[in-house]
Amino acid sequence: MKKQTFNDSGVYGIFSPDGKILYIGGSTKIENRFNSHYSLLKNGNHSNIMLQEFSEHYRFENLTFIILMNCDINDVFYYEKYFINVFNPPCNKSNNILEPIKFKLKNLKPKSELELKFYDYIKEYPLSNEIRLNCLCNDFYLKTGLKISTKRISVFIKVFGYKLYNNDHRGRIWIK
Image (cartoon, rainbow, N blue to C red; front, side, top):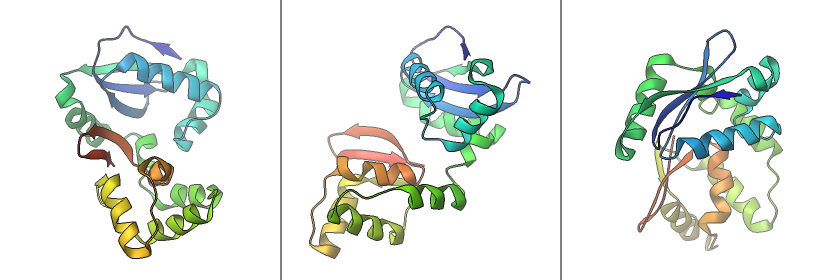
């Protein structure tokens, strides 16, 4: 995968060899995010199934990682959503349609009885664009009487296409 030189924060795109934009992301540390994409795609372990398939189709080394815009850390999320809405890249949609979620859920193996109960609970939970894991854990506890940590349920939230947006004093915030 080819890359440009980096600045700290901004919005980037992953492009096919013929110039089609496949994926748009934003990061407060673009170089770290590039290295993460690079390693996951190269090793065939990327959580975005569609991006991994494109990587294998076009051959990983032929993809290009381009910074679309450098911006202030506080503006990254806004501009990432803006570029996604403008370009509508295919790999950003993969987490928002039902089939990949069903596929991921089918292949997700809960490791304990507690995770199995949470797995059943989360399938019925009314998911929105933003989730605070501590609120989700509290709601799960109120409905079932069982306690589960936010770290333990993060994998389930990722299955539904959520990404960690902020980790502040009020708890982790996950967004779509």
